[in-house]
Image (cartoon, rainbow, N blue to C red; front, side, top):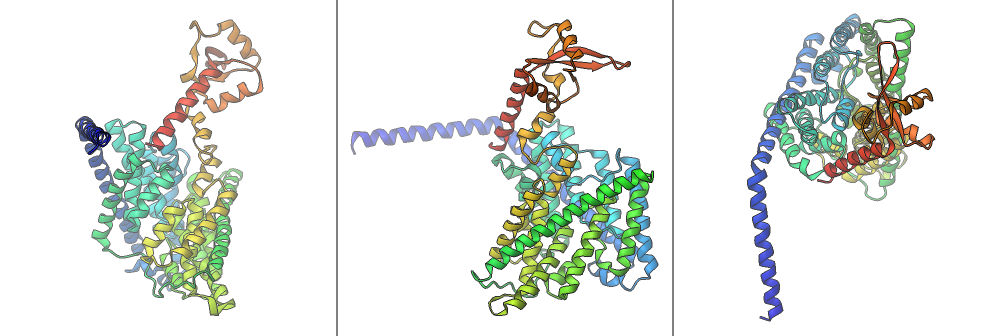
Length: 561
């Protein structure tokens, strides 16, 4: 063996020994705390999984009691046989109860859901509102049990956020730990709700945390597995939907049709999202114009839903029975189109009326109906090169849901896990890619991020847009009287010119002052009881930029750790 070879081997051996020693040192110093964190993640996953399970069982029990059926999987068929006045009264009474709960336990009469969890992950160190969250859970449970037309994933996700928030407050978790535990809770809740462990983990990363940091992956997967085990202990290893017709795809020839279906589904998802926002705006306008008490608003929406349900009972609740009919091709073309339109209206009324619930399950139903209608047309035009029309229903279900959630990866996987059919992945992926590409250009990325944008929370554009709103001028300013700060007299001169910012204002409100004029600083003021503005410090442009850069660097470090 030559001398250079021996030297190379010796260097490699020494490097290997050094790496082993470093790994052992890290294990001794950080291992126990990391293992402890994983146990906490597992415990949160178990708690969130049971919460999701009890929420689902609670809806089933209350819905069965109100509508007098033993099998809620066929509640739509059963509701057709009930007296019309009973179908009308149930959602009205449910809306009244929901309105009272939200009026009593929330400050704005609004149900908390996924958008609030996303906001909590980005802006409040992984914390969400506990009191309003618990109230929203009970309100959504009543809504989904009494004829509301929405889904259960929104309340379940926020309920999981409440659990992780409670734990974070007890252990005084920092921002990174709080966000990771929030992701664990969400992953477990989604997995327990839909028996979808892969999609549950990816949903937490893709939708809630909005990054795929390696340090968050292991605990989130652990929690997701825990949630899935809880679901399967109760319901067994079964899928939500069983496809009676095996999926078949005429490869290459039929793929352009699925790309076109994706564009159609993108437009359908846009209509669904815009209709909800339109209903919300109309509801706000009418409530203000008529001086309607906010506790009465859900009852008015319940009355509208009751009227619709008399003729179209398929709008009641989550809608899995109708979704199954679409996936098995048991609906005619005109029926599928009509059901999709009516369901869209019902979802808008439910959400705009502040009754609670989520948008994922309705998106699955509307997407399956859209896909079935498209498939019936496509297979009739070119029957010799077409597969089964139920395959289009399957792809449409994923395409609409992915566009609404703004989550093509996790939605594609959750659709696979809901059906157990992995053989038509190309069709689903083609439709999902086109629908999300189109819809994300016409709204602020997704339904949830658009909800936040309407509240002036700018998460869709990324950290560079929302971090300024997290930094207070009072925390970044130089105190008045310090050697490197302007004098009180100079501050009052600038205040007289209208160049000042409140101490509680964010840098988002302060930065425009530096853009319009060539100034180095602006006074930071507090207002006394008489409304007089008294300077307490000065916000310098360079200090604001440094604070902003530190926040950007910390965010980038977390996302790439």
